[in-house]
Length: 182
Image 1 (spheres, rainbow, N blue to C red):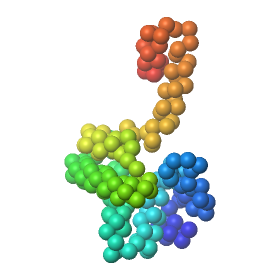
Image 2: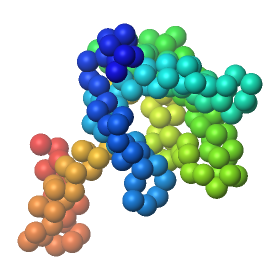
Image 3: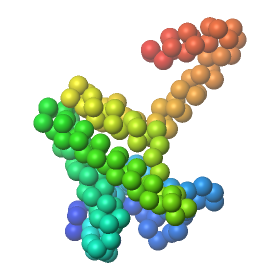
Image 4: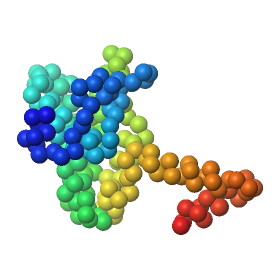
């Protein structure tokens, strides 16, 4: 709470006092929360890690670097959030930071998977961030990336279910795309 106050973060993560903030009934840990709360969490986690990490442990240094790269990426995206595309210099910084962060994430995943611990999993989202960063000089990732894709998928699911009723299966896609254009 003190870090939130000192960093002047308005949207605060409210689940710190619960184990359910990341422990699920099954599967690996997964952070839960609203997008606005999770968005600025990187600043707090970086400061907490700086207080408690051990600089003599290699994996701790890798985690610190990953957190710093993540924070740099978020700061870049926040700085240029109003732009349609990032200028060439920041776009290159974004791509370099994303590539390095994803590489570190892969190394950390490999390290922890050898110990039968599922941490730093990489997913389709990890792959997507590289593509978004690679095209950031053409279009800002904030304009095209729907956080986790869940709300977009929900809209498409609802639209698809309304377009298949009373239509031949081969015509459902055409009808859905026609409605989606509206």
